[in-house]
Image (tube, rainbow, N blue to C red):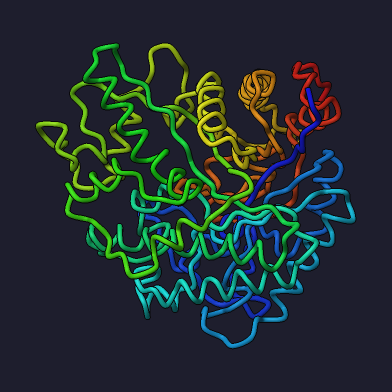
Length: 471
């Protein structure tokens, strides 16, 4: 197998902490309140104060690539400053230079669910085209400042999920469905302008879309059920990549938006701008597959008219909870949170994505969350994580052997960090962070068993996946 880049990922809102230090402004992640009572994101894993220690751990594990996100509010605290915040640039200088010194290639995501709160309050975020210009100013500042140092960029993290979870991702409450799709269109314009700006400012950097591509299986071979599964994949996966890679709104997607009365307003020049996009690669995240039953109406199809009745849920999140509880796959196992564990679905995703778009793929997230605690010797025996990752890497290797061009593979996540809705109850990392929900404790870092296993995987370029680590 050709040598690929190996590493892991974090993002600012879930990992950095230091929410009000170094001139940083308030973001939507700083004001976000989780309904289940889990802790907030303000301290997270305290990477802001422990960067050098954390980077040393990545070097020890043998990372050749590391994905982080840049907090917009560290660079422009309200999003509308004339000049960038020097302390914020200095912080990321330390990170990027520290990675390079350790032989690790930096990958930066420019937006990962942490819009400046001031822009949410003043403009309702990306609902206003003014925010596109402000985002491009921020992105261009990063391209110029880190020219020649950051090698890979992702403009937006998982934009195909924005309308599904708009309040969490965009930070604006109460948007109508039509407003959500208008904001989605503006994000598309921001993405294209970002790609074009990167190519103009730093031609050697590689940039492209990110997608949380979800493979959806029908629960039977009944043609109508197969059609439902296929159509949902088109709407939540391929429509976005068709736009972001091919540069146009596909007809099936326009038909859908028209049927649900959510067609965005296209201003003069919008479609021509979108047609100009030429990404260098696609980045993807993969955790699980989904199953759709004949009687189910998905969060897309309930509005589309294909199904006779809509489900009883009032929100998309309620629908997703039902999906995970009731739509498990009888041929697979699942995590504590009902996420289907399906390594073969990873092969499906990679093969379909590559042969559909013929662009190199950079895998930015793949992992399993679990409840974990240190034992009496301050160890975590996370064999389930080793098993999960080994099986997914094995199928990735099979996809590579079958012609898929993989740039690199990053797990989620390097450290334990504040999970999206479960805080530190749900842990993903190779490195245990000593804190609980509302108890900060020491914040010390402890290497799990998987730390040493992944080090071996990297050393062998993914060939030795055996769980034979002495820990």
